[in-house]
Length: 68
Image 1 (spheres, rainbow, N blue to C red):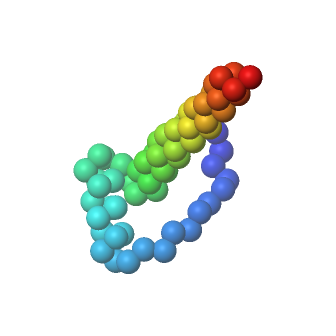
Image 2 (tube, rainbow, N blue to C red):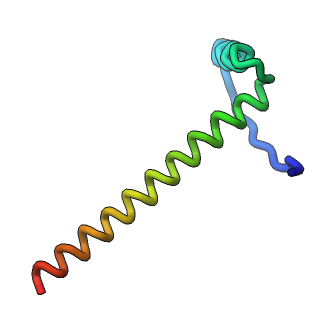
Image 3 (cartoon, rainbow, N blue to C red):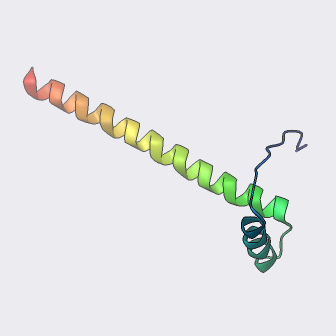
């Protein structure tokens, strides 16, 4: 898949250093490592958000069934 989109992230030198070290520790360049970590985190957040939304809907349905 072609990667045509970009994001820019401003970092302090210390932040850049620690991210570079983490990427190197996993044998990846910084860009590939950051992309991987961000995608994993984003998917988890979206999944948890969807679960919370479904839970809220189920609770509302349950309350509606109890009061009717």
